[in-house]
Length: 101
Image (spheres, rainbow, N blue to C red):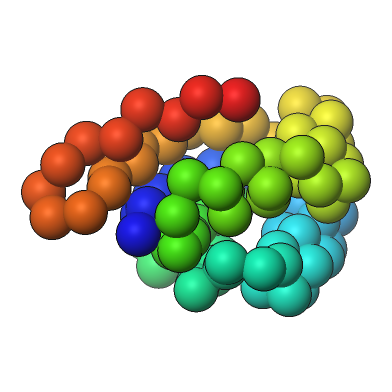
């Protein structure tokens, strides 16, 4: 299993469009082979900040996700609507995982 935690923020004035992008990405990613969990949640203390928890069966499933049109669309749409704050990944028990795209 590969666990990924991501934090993103919406640019001022782009909150609703950003939420729509997150919901679209979440729905499509959940349907992918090897996706165990894919969930965006709103930060309770910082408006416009969202956290993503992804859990993938294995590296092949994660690489498959990176190759989808959904992932490409999310990456291309991210910059005008918001920004990536942080991303960290783990594999197995307590082992860090380096994401290679």
